[in-house]
Amino acid sequence: MESLMLRDDQSRSPADRQRSDRQRLDRQRSSCPVLLSQRLVLRAPHVEDIDALAHLANNAAIATMVSRMPHPYTAKDAADFVRRTNIGEIGKCVYAITKAENGEFMGCCALEPHPGDEDTLELGYWLGEPYWNKGYATEAAHALIDMAFRTREIARIDARCRVTNIASRRVIQKSGFQFQGSGMVGNLATRGMMPVEWYRLDRKTWLSLKSWGEMR
Image (cartoon, rainbow, N blue to C red; front, top):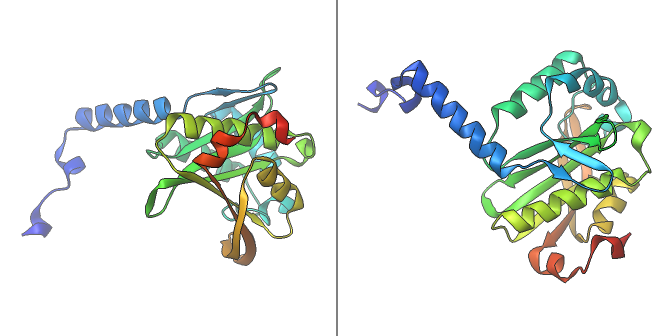
């Protein structure tokens, strides 16, 4: 009997499905507002970002440090990424990291729900190599973390970095995260596994931090 039933989205008219899609996107945008910091604007990835995204992401030094970035990274990969982020997933926020002064695309960061734990979000980020060691990743992470704790009813945020990624570990530690343990995760670029460290920032610790500036 169940196999004869239509899925809800299949039983609706095209106009109703389009209206539902627009409503879902509106909810997604309202839960992922544009974020401003001293030097950055964090906003949804745009089609106009595709060329810069493909150029910066096509770097083995980046792909081998994150879990889900293919290598080589092509313009098609960039276009698919932008399309997927614009479709939206409730609870997940993907941002383009851009310079406030000129809108220059520098990389991406994201918050996404932790599987099986509605009280936890996972933080991720990457920057193109020309923008390393300038404090941009830390600034973006602080903006995301503040937004998450102020607008979401969550208890904690997790972050992971490859054990050899000293720069990413520094960003995580400067953002108040505490070491929890280590493990292995898949790496799309190498089609293998990589060792990672797991860090956590809980709401109580975040509230105890007088200002991000004290941690720099």
